[in-house]
Amino acid sequence: MNTLLAPPHALAPAPDAVWALSGARAVRLRPIAAADASAEQAFFRSLSLDSRHKRFHVGLRELSPPLLKLLTEVDQRMHIAWVGEALEPALPVVADARYVREAEHPWRAEFAVAVADDWQGRGLGRRLIGHLAEHARLHGVQQLYGDVLADNRRMLALMRDQGARLTPHPDGPQLVRAVLDIAA
Ligand SMILES: CC(C)(COP(=O)(O)OP(=O)(O)OC[C@H]1O[C@@H](n2cnc3c(N)ncnc32)[C@H](O)[C@@H]1OP(=O)(O)O)[C@@H](O)C(=O)NCCC(=O)NCCS
Image (cartoon, rainbow, N blue to C red):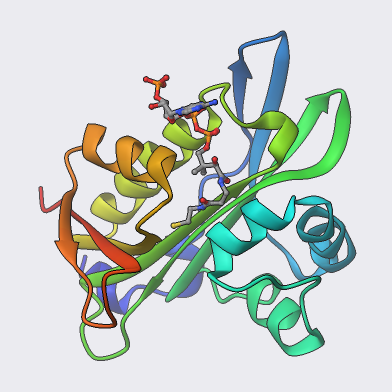
């Protein structure tokens, strides 16, 4: 099957993976849905300014209505996204992970992740990146890339550990492009 031409349901992320994390916490990973809009907004509002800045590269206070729609009303085909829902303690969204295929080159995709501040450092970010890479690879993506602020040492260390190439960014030294070659 040519996955680049597959119907939307064929690429829908596998639902309901449950991950046990350090500190007796657990997260269920599930595909994002339009109904998650208010929980997604609450998640982004709850992020520290530093985390929001690292995710969006600007200090957004909250997601604008168009951006919220863009992030939650995804086709799960070109734009594939999950939220991490906390089971213990119960919280609707404590993480967000996504990748977006390029329209012209659907074998290339840009990814982004964010983990709630209180949930960072428990291995969730590492698992999310691994999950994105595995899902993307299985669905025909050969290269995943993300733009990381040059001072985002945690993300750069994580990407280096995952085997990413860290390359200069055309927009200048404040950014680094992390490129994961994931062709089978
Ligand atoms: C970057 C981010 C996704 C990582 O998620 P996380 O759940 O904290 O990551 P993990 O717990 O899996 O840790 C991954 C690595 O980060 C580093 N790390 C974790 N906690 C750390 C801490 N407190 N201080 C420094 N480094 C740390 C370690 O290298 C760790 O590797 P290890 O598993 O060998 O210890 C998360 O910090 C985040 O959402 N940051 C804000 C948004 C952002 O930067 N997004 C990426 C934009 S491209």
